[in-house]
Image (cartoon, rainbow, N blue to C red; front, side, top):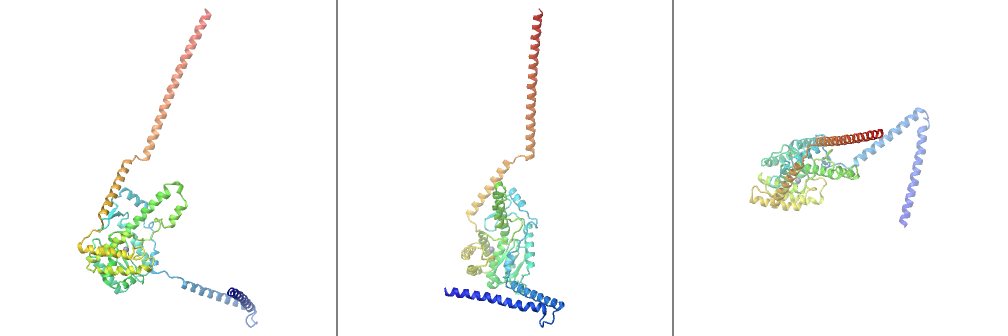
Amino acid sequence: MNDLLEFLWDCIKGLFRGIFWLGTLLFEFLPWLWNGSEEDDATWEGRFIRLLMTLAGGVLIGCCLCLLNWAAQPKLSVLEKIDAIQVSFDRLAINRKTLINDLKQHPLEKRVEVPSHLRKRFLILTDDQLNKIDAAYLAEIKKLEVGLQNAKYRKRAEGIASRIQSVMERKPSGTVYLLDTDEFQAFCLSGGSIMITKGLMDQLSDDDELAFVIGHEYAHFLCRHTGESITKGMIAQEFGETFFFEEKPENAGNSLKASFAKLGYHYGVLIGVLLPYSRTMEYEADRLGVLLMKRAGFNVQGSFKAMERIAAMDQDSSAVSHFLSTHPKGEKRLDEIREAAALLETSDTPVWGSKLTVATESVKVAAIKKWLAAREKKAVPPAEENTMNQTDKLKEKLMNTKNAAADTADKLKEKLMNTKNADTDAAEDSDRQKQK
Ligand SMILES: [Zn+2]
């Protein structure tokens, strides 16, 4: 209670002190502005100069405050800046509707196999379109000027990358980019350009460890995972729009649409290229990464050591790190890598998929074939022709009715005439009888 009273008393004292100081300042300042310091410069020129001095002083203090504020603001890290890059698909003339329609027309042609995994998945973007996305993305990264120019780092990374490239059946078109940051990150663009941070290279001082990370990134390229991720996003959006927005008129323009848009469901306009890979893709990249590093002559033990480090870093993962955040848990990945390495001991060209994968794939293909057959069966003549037919039929029907009506009218007329004639005959008969 005493503490509270003391605190209140301090507040009141502070308030009065503030008012007192402000009053004193104004009391001193206003006479100075009007009369000058010696009370002998009470001319208009003197007052004007003193006013200008006051304003200049105010502007200077304001600028200093702004500068301090700017300096105190949190700076974006290199990875955060890269993560914020967005590439407009519309500007690259990549249209989702066209791609989805193409997929609907030729679904089986769009199923592509992942190397060594028996897994097939849809891929609707062409290599040409993916290259366009890569180029736009790289142009944005270059604008950031975050590249590392150190020759020693470059030689080490490029040396390992070229050894791994030499055992790849499909060669990447991109190069190795080094990023000047102590953060731990590596990622791959669809055309095979890989990016590695200085921090990652420092942490993985052993070449065998770095070879695993580079192999893992090139595996993403070989499996075309970026294209798969974008395809999945586009199909998901199409699905969302068809079932939630367009097909049901009651859903038009409701808040559901807005919340989907907020969730980043709308790919058409803007899309980040760094889409998180799925767990399935990460395991595929890990296994294929081990295979590539082994074929290139690196020690497979390096992959275990690298993954142990990554697992240890899992605890304090940064939000954007490709290797940590979107990935499965490090320990689980370590188990999978050990399994892959064990399989590599027995076979040089292992197949990681199971019989189940093959069975699932054949079920999927059968379902698509069935759907295609049903679609062909259902195929009807174009709507325009249909309408024409219907109009013709209606016209014909109308004509028939008209003719029938005319016939009936004629018959009635005839009947009427007959009756009339009969009547006249009868009348004449009666007249004759009268005359008689
Ligand atoms: Zn990965």
